[in-house]
Amino acid sequence: MSDQGMTIHLKIWRQASGSSKGSFHDYSVQDVLPEMSFLEMLDLLNEDLVKKGEEAIEFDNDCREGICGTCGLVIKGVAHGTHAGTTTCEVRMRSFRDGETITVEPFRAGPFPIIKDLVVNRSALDRIQAKGGFVSMNVGSASDGNAVPISKHAADNAMDAATCIGCGACVAACPNASASLFVSAKISQFSWLPQGGPERTRRAMEMVSQMDAEGFGDCSNHGECEAACPKEISIQNIARMRREFIRAAFLG
Image 1 (cartoon, rainbow, N blue to C red):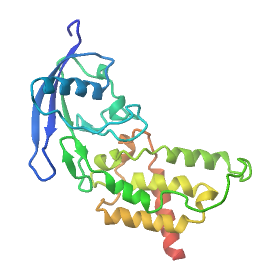
Image 2 (cartoon, rainbow, N blue to C red; image 1 turned 60 degrees about the horizontal axis):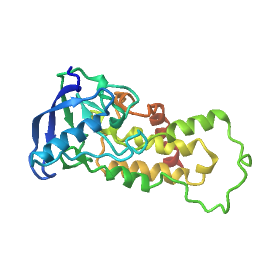
Image 3 (cartoon, rainbow, N blue to C red; image 1 turned 45 degrees about the vertical axis):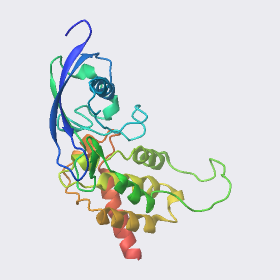
Image 4 (cartoon, helix red, strand yellow; image 1 turned 90 degrees about the vertical axis):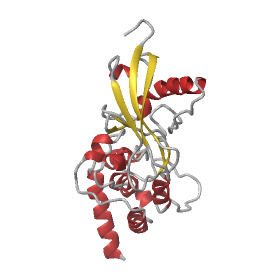
């Protein structure tokens, strides 16, 4: 490694549009500092491409703090990279060797069509969320925080499920392109709380039905979703989703 930083070689998927044919292109980035994030390294590459009069590489990003769920790349064959509990924007270049070649691809799944380069359309998850991933009951002004007792066990499980940021890594990692971990997290976070009770049946039926309508595959318990999830959502939520769906089916 030089005094200025590392040299990183990249094989990046380039695709002009969803209807065009894509392919891998080779790039090299000089002066990559170990403390840079993966996205900052891509920024450095894009600056160089623009200076050369070439088209910059498109990729999703927003908060760059592991909060929003906007970023999402398959790095070295793994959604969000090889570090557990980490979003793409949190990956640091100190994780790679000077001179290493890194393959970068978009999240690949039928319900996530490619828009351009590394950007995919994940609006299918938004449509599932719109079917019931919320509490819509009008209960007036906010009540006292202690008015509805909730056990610590239930509160902790609800909060663990609620940490899902909807990035779609679970879909990209699953060999079936299943969205079960995402949907189960959105269903579970309310099933643990009394506030989610009034819409419990409708939520389970409509969110699961929308997941199927979007073309996501079935869960076959590979566990890849849990391994790739940057918030380490447990696949136990999938079992809870199934129980909620069966309960809703019997109640009509």
